Amino acid sequence: MSAAGTTTTNHVIPEMMHALQVVKLGLAEESLQYNQVKTPKVTSPHDILIEVRAAGVNPVEAKARQGNLPIPFLSTPRIMGSDYSGIVVDKGAKVTEFNIGDAVYGSLLQPIGPNGSYAEYILTSRSYLYGGAIIKKPDNISFEEAAGVGIALVTAYQAIAGSSYNLPKEGTKKILVIGASGGVGTYAIQYAKTIPDTQVIGVCSGKNAKLVRSLGADDVIDYTSKEAMDTLVKDEARTYDMIVDCIGGDDYYYQVISLLKKKGVYSTAVGPSIHFGAQKQGLLDVAKIGMTLLSRKLFGSHSYQITLIPSWKVLEMEVAPLLASGKIKTVLREDQIFDLKDGVQAHKKIESHRTVGKIILRV
Image 1: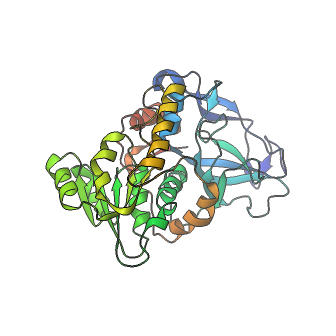
Image 2: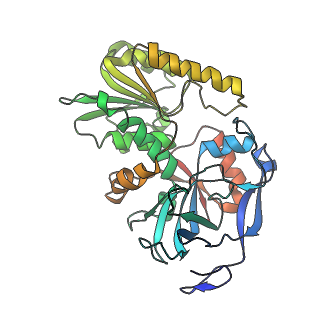
Image 3: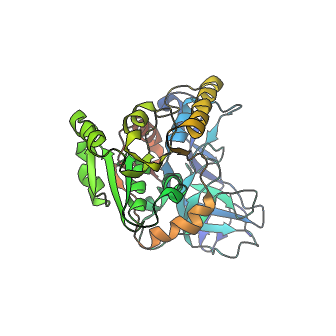
């Protein structure tokens, strides 16, 4: 085990590092600063120090930074971010499954920090109490692709796999993915297609239809076309086994719920409030959402499931093999990859709700 400021296998660990800090809650340009802070150190035998190559940006981080989520005592300054990829540069004595120099990716336990992945170095741990996930990065995916995986892919996986008991054991299965071109939706399309004998239909704007088809969707519905949506609801009523909602809100729920078979399930990655946290949410708002969720689960016409907390064991045990095999990939656009110092632009981009695939900070 080494200390900061020393050389570990030809890698000099500096005393100070750059990080994207939230210095106050509010607008991105007022909140985020590219600052120098102390580099974390290995102090526990279970610790792993990682030089970050890329960090994923998720909506929850922007919402928390704005102060829109009812999180008490959210102090500043803090470094947000959960998803990362990088190189192991130091480790504790009891870390045996990773070596210095290993390329890795994963997720930290808390996307809101205070010591998150928007930084040049992060400290994670294999201790049970610390949580999170760390996985060796396969050679077939880049650091940027690996950094996009964590929260979004695990959410997509849990939304589908967690409700797969409703899918018929025999015959063709039919799944509708709403928000198919977004961060969670692009993964949901791909994972749904790994289920044998499954027909997957994506709902997105017409300009993203080609991309969604390239991910495996059997058909694409343009949500901007009233005619296309009306035709979907009219012609395909009671033919779907699952609806995966990556947008949220009541509009889609009431519009498409009639598409489900009697034993079909409506599985949402967001909940009954569209883009929850885009505006300031109080405890009363959370209570109202809770009542809606309870009502739909107990009295709704179909099974209703919501994905709330990512399981990092799922990332390590179930999701990682799909990436390594190439069955699932991260959708990246060059205009959605930002340098760490340009994190303000990354957050403004994700707040637009017009992203395609993932947003990445290159470190």
